[in-house]
Image (cartoon, rainbow, N blue to C red; front, side, top):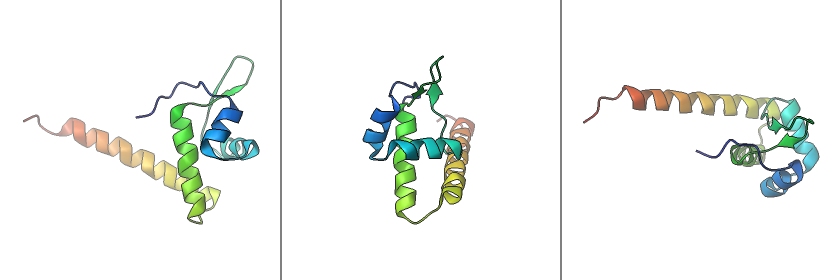
Length: 93
């Protein structure tokens, strides 16, 4: 799992995800990700956020709109939770 500590400025995150800065702001407004903020309000992106941005790029490339992407991301997160619960419920050998 990727690090969730916000360490990258928006310009670095945009460059690493190969996106425009304004797109990152749109994705945040649409609820696709929520970067950390400094006390002054500056966005700080984590490795996990960048992974989400890369996934958004993949889904956009497949023709999904932002509402569809939000749903896919939510379902993928739910599957991750269920998988971890199944892993915890399995008896040890």
